[in-house]
Amino acid sequence: MILEAYAAGLFDGEGSIYLNRAGTLATISVTVTNTDKRVCQVFNSQWGGRIIEEKREPYKLIYRWKVHGKKARPFLIGIHEYSIVKHDLITLALQWIDTIGTPKVAVTRDNIKKRATILNKIHSIKGK
Image (cartoon, rainbow, N blue to C red; front, side, top):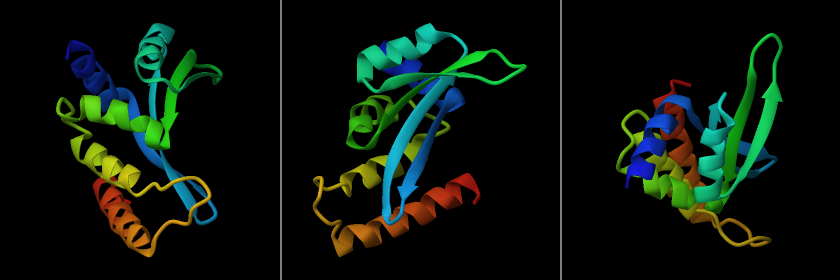
């Protein structure tokens, strides 16, 4: 419980939910960015994913924990009840994950419609 609440607070301030698109395919990505690698290591050890190091001059080295698609579900479920700022986005991301089928199986028309609705809601929240 404490870890999930702590993670939710960090995610509200330093996290992102976004869609990766490749043609007609799209998947949810979840990230948390911090200048202290230990933060990302805790996320990685608890929820999997990967850590990316980025150096942008003249700024400090940053670490980005990242998880995609269905693998993001346990993290999002774990922090959902504790999130304040991104609670609605987490709800939508979980709905999107529910539309993910199995590899090499076409997305159903019903799920395409659901995704369009979810995407419009995400854009509305993010002000796009």
